[in-house]
Length: 316
Picture 1 (tube, one colour):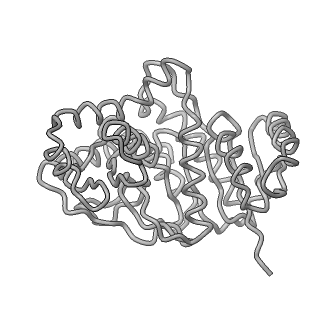
Picture 2: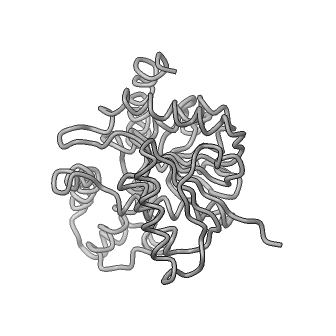
């Protein structure tokens, strides 16, 4: 008999509910439980999803619940956190969200939970670190959404620029989900051809890649300035990650992963390509970065580590 697949979502804001709605559409879990500090909102959101069930792919047991529901969950997704305001950076949210994620993770673990935690509140690399420290779970079983959305944005923009399907574009945003991210262009491919070779052959301006990266890096701020929040893209990105885990896909995704000596750094979470399976992080793929990209990754790591040491650790 097939085991039931249960996902618990903590946080029923725009990001959480975009993820929940996408799970209803894809329809291949058995149970979805919504938890929020505002229990009435969680109940209302569950009702709203339930009423769409007649038109969904299959029946999913959707309900609002409490942290006891985490005990037998396969995955708990944490989207609870403060909303980024216009003019704020993701790192500005650190103190508020550290307290929130610490409290949420403590409650999750009280249930006896022993699955995988996926973190998607900002600054996500730091909040993933907080969730792992507080939970005490193995580091491979606590994963941040990292640069999963950034990478999707990159692939989309390259697809539009080159008029080639995004499914054939293999390129990554690495580093912090934020201002110190970067693209290792040496490791970007169109099908099996190097992107830089394609640019040269088509006689395109390589400087266009710098603009594409800037547009990717600023995309979140641009959306926040226009509509106050981003949620559809990250909701679908979380759906992709959760299904990769549940289906034991062994797929490579750029997520926030614990650094254990890869790329010469240890002790923090940062965005890198990683192999995702039912065990969480199966392996970190260590790209052979050129010297310039090594310095960019080091800068990203140091930025995150400074905040962890000076701001986060005193709160844990």
